[in-house]
Length: 255
Image 1 (spheres, helix red, strand yellow):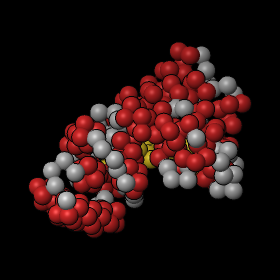
Image 2 (cartoon, one colour):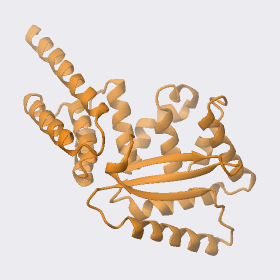
Image 3 (cartoon, rainbow, N blue to C red):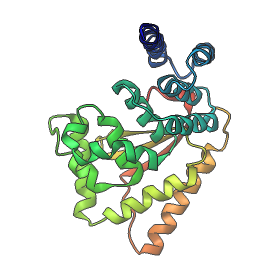
Image 4 (tube, rainbow, N blue to C red):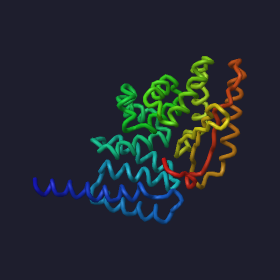
């Protein structure tokens, strides 16, 4: 029993040491990413199916432009199951969103979405990114009630108000679904920016792809075309406070 306990403690210590490395890694530092992947591989040989190491490996594969490998590891992590310590759960949820594995992300986020105020204490960006990705204006509306003193929340509140006031909630959801359907098999990162320079809030959805993917302009054009076609068929005017950007993962500051 003592040997088992010692091994578990040692595994946690070694995993936490690598977590710090992964957390501090820059997305454009390929050599450091590859070295850390090798380090995690060695630890997984000692501790097979360690879910926290699998979470780290998922993030590293995203950073290494291996989004399909990352999806496979994320799915395997789900199958292995078990409890994750909070910082690993946060990373796992974040990467499920990055990889557009929406159903799995929703299951893990559901308790937080049901109690938004408490959830925002630990999963603020994950909850916002998930609500944006799924076009869930109702969740966004509850999120922006949590901290009106925060500048980002204040900006998002104005964005939400625009869609509520114009009764565009359904259209917002459909537009976000259209954008995601165009790229969900290739995407490996999902983030957003808020801008208020025009006197109201513009939200830019930033989607990241493998460094070896040269179809970024094609994705953007396809998204824009499909959204415009939707607005025409629905008989509505498009609100130009929501835009989409496609970038390579090496250009990602952090997610």
